[in-house]
Image 1 (cartoon, rainbow, N blue to C red):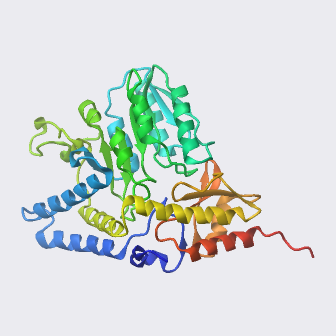
Image 2: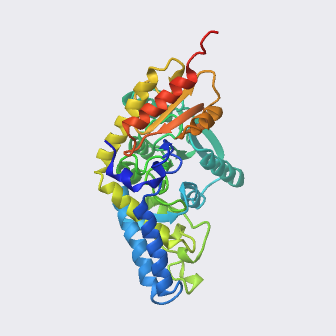
Length: 394
């Protein structure tokens, strides 16, 4: 049975969609909330005394709701444009010393890796990696291996560890809270930066967000909000130690005087003018998801759909799933023998079936959400079976 949430998604009316990890479709009522906010701003005047209470209320409502989703005080949140800016803005504000080591998992997104490498170039830091992409087993074994490898990779110079909550390629969940506890026992207590691009909206996020120093999220993937708006949860110690980086009037405690100093809370990493209707749209998407159950309940539904797809793929001789066990979340990555992932994505797209290809490792990725139906899973598997069937002898 399809989720009631699905009825709000016109993008699903004419396609079979498995790209929630790239961008989720926008609900109709979220678009309506955005349009209504634009109209209200114009009615009040886009820059008048009357408009500011509306702006402040809209922003505050979303900040409060996301604080609940992430389990942290609203003061520890900063609104950003996307996950990358949520990672980079506080990261570049930390106090670095030449020779400090950045330890990065080998499954991190290239955007975050590139930002860390440029930071290392400018500050004279050392970049090291630790292997995670080969972990294909069950959650308990994966957690144990992650922590063992972290222990082996840490050095006296380690100052930052970068680890996604849900790996965007293999689909494994990382033990963020346990990793944070291990880092607290390290003599230098390295900061923990968590890319949560694939987590918010697909997994319960509170324990990880509370444990990380930087927990960067976006609203446009699994939350099915509008693109262009994200949030980052910051630890108390990061707020005490990090300086603002990209600075604007929203970074200041009082806009009228630059000498008044920066906000003491997460707002010091906010910059300048944002599109306020996006805030209204994302809040409505979060409301709709909340109506579908708790974060734990939604995760179980997502995982069940991913597990069903994983099991159906096992029956196709030419298909090999990346994971040896059913996925712990909604990312199902697989390889089709003898077929380039990019070309196969195009062939499936011609049939109205949309998933994506990844470069590292080379594979296809299908994302299941609470909206995904049994019929959609069957259509994908049937299409793959037809494309991989051996040609009949003449």
